[in-house]
Amino acid sequence: MVLKRQSLNLFLGFLLTSFITPRSIARFVVEKNSLRVTSPDKIKGTYDCAIGNFGIPQYGGSMAGAVVYPKDNKKGCKEFDGFGISFHSKPGALPTFVLVDRGDCFFALKVWNAQKAGASAVLVADDMEEPLITMDTPAEDVSSAQYIENITIPSALIEKTFSEKLKKALSNGDMVNVNLDWREAVPHPDDRVEYELWTNSNDECGVKCDMLMEFVKDFRGAAQILEKGGYTQFTPHYITWFCPRAFTLSRQCKSQCINHGRYCAPDPDQDFSSGYDGKDVVLENLRQLCVFKVANEAKKPWVWWDYVTDFQIRCPMKEKKYNKECADAVIKSFGLDGIKIDKCMGNPDTDSDNPVLKEEQDAQVGKGSRGDVTILPTLVVNNHQYRGKLEKGAVLKAICSGFEETTEPAVCLSGDVETNECLDNNGGCWQDKIANITACRDTFRGRVCECPLVDGVQFKGDGYRHCEVSGSGRCKINNGGCWHESRDGHTFSACSDVDGAKCQCPPGFKGDGVKSCVDVDECKERKACQCPACSCKDTWGSYECSCSGDLLYIRDQDTCISKSGAEVKSAWTVVWVIFIGLAMIVGGGYLVYRHKLRSYMDSEIRAIMAQYMPLDSQAEVPNHFHEERA
Image 1 (cartoon, rainbow, N blue to C red):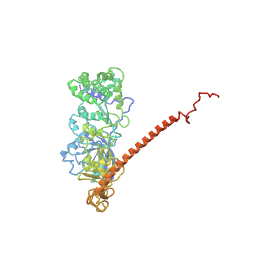
Image 2: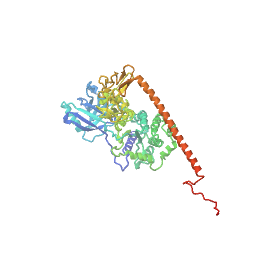
Image 3: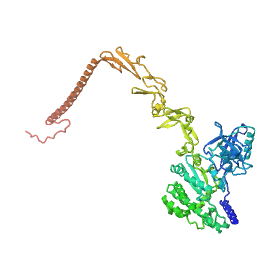
Image 4: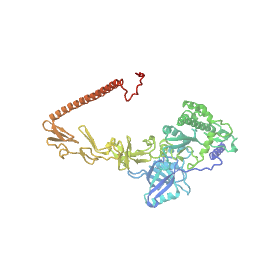
């Protein structure tokens, strides 16, 4: 039995290290963030560190802290409480970054012990001169499952040479302050994030499978919001291995592979004689890929999240439901075309390539800056591999850090992901408290100060100290920043909607037009109502002028005239208007009558004369009678 188990482990190890095609060269990329030392001056500068593949890195943000190197338990393999060591920060002090040495225990255990003692982050010092590596979680250690799940602080591996500089500065009594920065850990070129999840349908592979299943359930809602809004482009991927040619006819390859050893997966329970086989996992992986392809063709790629979630719930291995019948029932419940999915999957018994799985094997090999995918599960955001806990909030931070600043969707600015920096002192930006208008705009990476666009009216300025309305419609927003006031139902404003116009007090007022406009006393300054019989009374923004006795004030001429004279004058005006109108009517009628009469007489005279003599306008009439001679 022991020999059988050893042979099995050797075969699985061979499979796990043989997934890359013979023509490819494996290349694993270590994802890094920057560590900037701000003090002391002698080691001040920026250094690379490798992001740990557990905990929660602060993607899109940064964290400042003070480095502490413990006197005891330097490798962090034991709980620090047993040494009377606490890393909890005092009120007002910087968070504590604990420096521990590599060796003797798992990376994750070191970080967990430091977190329990109050550390805000952990730096692991490498014990040899080598390129940085990625600190991963132990794959087979069942006892570590609980604490790995509860690690919430970030961690990073630093090079041995750099760690010695930190230790030397600390031994000299220097305060070592550093800043961990993840803002550039994920590229953010535009307003759409492209991300991939390298996953597996196997639900009996231990801690990582459990974490993956929980993540898919929790992240489904956020993923679908991002996808339906067009903010992201998501693609699922599945890792498969191939069986070396020398073993394609072996019992192991036949039970773990399809298409004659081309696409394989390890046995779920590592027992070739019972339970599910690796080829069952490969077939479900292939089915889930085809579910995505068919859903994507139907313009509904987000249905993949629904299918995978429901398949995990309805078709688990432990209930012996991990099969095609259960999968088909899930497919039917979402209205997907099962025939298209079966056609996409092809024949698993054929001795030829499967186009879908062949494409997946090619994609495993790193291209560009991404590197090979060797850790399962792996999230890739904008062609950079995510490092950290596969948890909704942490992953959403990584995805949101991939958007160009100010283009993040609302889900990235929710309280679950980040805090709104505009709530604290308005982010230090310009603000009009009266109109409740601000230049502060919250983004995932922080805040930007930009003069706003309000109701179609653009503000212009530096966004920090000054913003003012510009263009037409400017008076709609807080009266264009100009003076305005209302009294007794009358409102006056110094604002003009003319583009480029400045604040100018309206007629009847004087002042700067911005902070104040003061009423002009037209009576006192003798600007109106100055006639001898006039009596002047100043009003707000204008004046009232009256005349003594029965006189009437004429405002345009600033004079007083008799009311009776005005009435007589008005009456005679009406009479004259009527008289002139009648005269014009009579005169016009006379002219028309005269013209018609003359025309009639002329025609009669011409008719009479035409009987006795030819007129100039007529030809001579010939004489038909001959004169007789005497």
